Length: 145
Image: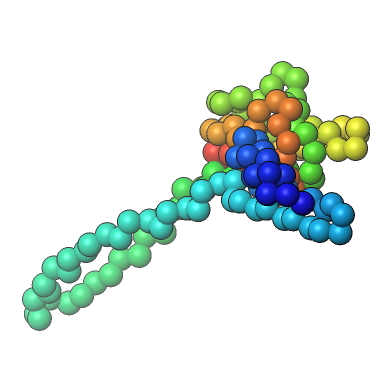
């Protein structure tokens, strides 16, 4: 395996949304990996100052059950292959029902439906028509209904 071959493989990895390329040639193996999604930044720390409590005042705590807002859910690829959007395509703002086909993944010339694992509104589309995808790769982000 020549340096030129390795450079071509690295260039392909930069050009396409693929996280891993493996190549075996003449008894030599090459595996090149990179993360597809940037690592999540930690939330900023908040500075909280405590107000002084007078000794004569009883300290009373009120507990109010607060509903935490539901987090957006990621719909991910269920296998490796080429992603094809559903007809009509699921795009930003589209309401998706639980189990609705949002697209399909072509693997070994077989089309496999990708069902929505949760219901919600599409807030991010991560893949284009015909793009290669890997198992677990993010396809869509859904905001809860």
